[in-house]
Amino acid sequence: MRILQLDPQSIALRARASSTSAPSLNESLLRGMLGFTLVSVAGFAPWALAGRWLQHHLGEVGLYAVCLLVFLGLSGPALHRLLIGPGSLARFSALFACGFSLYAAAWTSAWMLLGGHAGSLLGLGTGTALLAATLAFTFGVRSQWAAIFALLFTLNSGGYFLGGLLANHLPGISGKLLWGLCYGLGFGAGLGSAFFVCQSKARSLLNSAVSPHASGK
Image (cartoon, rainbow, N blue to C red; front, side, top):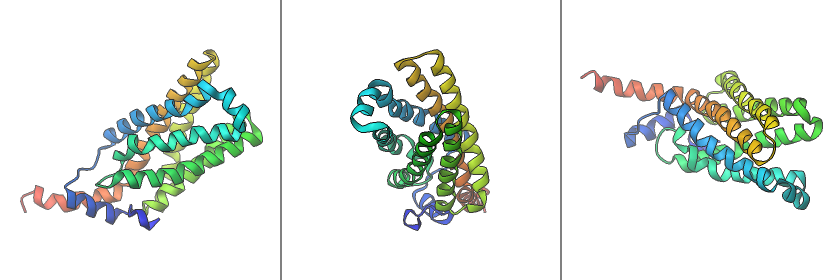
């Protein structure tokens, strides 16, 4: 996906030309968690508020498709600042639409095939692997795929299963929205840390370009 120009050199060139600073790890985590939590609660809302109606009229796949559209529509405005440099909204939206659609397709297929915890775990694993591969390939950091996958899978799964556990003790709309909140916090933390890792080479290029001026040379 060279068209997005998210390789380390391209990111560094854009950021240097616009004097854009790179977000720290803490900033990336906070942006990811806050942004994706808002997106996730909104994405769970069709299921929580109108799940039966949507499933009756559109089927189970149609219900998931509606939720996916909410995720895709809101993620760009909420999370694009995870990318370093100008033009982040369009680039993030395109990248996330590709990666998260693969993730959602894998999760939905596994859930419909197996159901329960087994289906969820298989879906989270295969979906996260596809999302991590999309990020690693697009950012030109394929050697870091395993690290990206580990971050996303651990934090995403933690939020997902914690949310499911809490939702079982709080049935109805409130429980479903609480699940969305926990999922958003976990997956958001994973996205924040993953995007930080994906842009580590670009950050190094920026630092090496700035350091001579900072030292007075």
